[in-house]
Amino acid sequence: MSEKILAAKSGRENGVEPGEIVEADVDYVMVNDVTGLPAFEVFEEFKAEPYRDKIVLIPDHYVPNKDVASANQAKAMRDFARKYKIKNYYEVGEGGVCHQLMIEEGYVAPGRLIVGADSHTCTYGALGAFATGVGSTEAAAVFATGKLWFKVPETQKYTVNGKLGKYVMGKDIILHIIGDIGVDGALYKAMEFYGNALCDLDISDRLTISNMAIEAGGKAGIIPADKKTDEFLKGKVRGPYKAVYSDKDAAYVQEYEYEAKDIPPTVAQPSLPSNTKPAAELSNVAIDQAYLGSCTNGRIEDLRIAARIIKGKKVKEGVRMIVVPATKRVFEQAMSEGLIKVFMDANAYVSGPTCGACLGGYMGILAKGETAISSTNRNFVGRMGHKDSKVYLASPAVVAASALTGHITDPNDLK
Image (cartoon, rainbow, N blue to C red; front, side, top):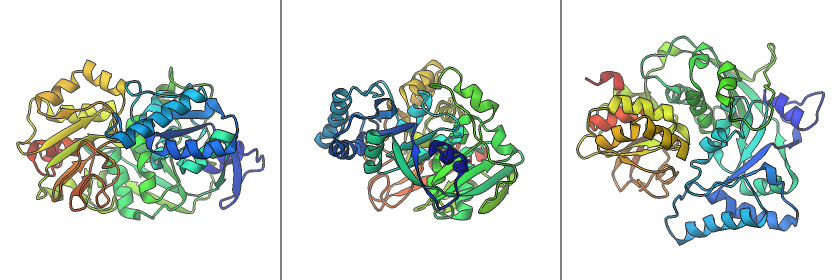
């Protein structure tokens, strides 16, 4: 799929081969408030008119601004949007976490080539696109030329068949895979995901899987489009699209097969996403904070399952639970469905959309010696606060169950 998309976007009618360097037309380029400023500075050196319709500007990392430095970053984006009349700019209060917003606003569709100055841009592969993270300099080049060079990646195939167990989500699947292959197991590879277990997943869980392809070193994480994809895109996608599929006899550099029944609710222990273990085996780990949100697991489906587990109960005394819907739209839907009240009745803290806690920026920072169970995507040393804090990665279901008990908990073990 990656080879076909890159061939089409670079005008190579005879196709491309892994390892080749191509210059391809990019459909959209996204920057956030952290990566935007250096991109704007580099763009000015081109002394060119920008490809306005391809540029998407989304403040989300320090929203609302936490200090003067982050306010200056946000102002730079606001000024750039105004100066160059960039219409795809989402002011605070209008948008949310960039990757969820890119999908909600219809920029992502099968067969498209999208880059973003954020490593989790690979999320969009769940809708059959080739999407990858780039640096701010590369983003600036797309601003100015509409194109970017790519090294064509080799492709791996991952197949998950069978019926998933209760409370097993897309997060558990991708953690299970990363636990198997390691954080460099897909280094600069395109990861393609197949199997009837994947077909049964809703789009939200598929997005979670593609989101964490980068945590295995992947260049892209792609799930072929199907009827669920088309249904999801109805009424939101911008412009026409044409899905791309791998040939039936396509050659993969590696192939992996998994049985869905062998995947339990899974947790990544500190300090790598590959350091995985079944949640049921970590019940001795006490937590100080439970975090539900981020581009990985801040969608309405994630909030629903957490609310279902928490409804009518209270967060364990001594534990903080923070809930962050990924976008304004998710927040509004959660309110209309009564989910926000469920969380607040349980004594959870609910915030407007922001990346703040996930990247250790602000709002939810861990103190020395504290432990968090988090639905985010990274648990490196110091990721969410003090270098001597600990972050365990898990699904929304495990996060919710753990918030109730005060220790890491498989939701199947709740009484």
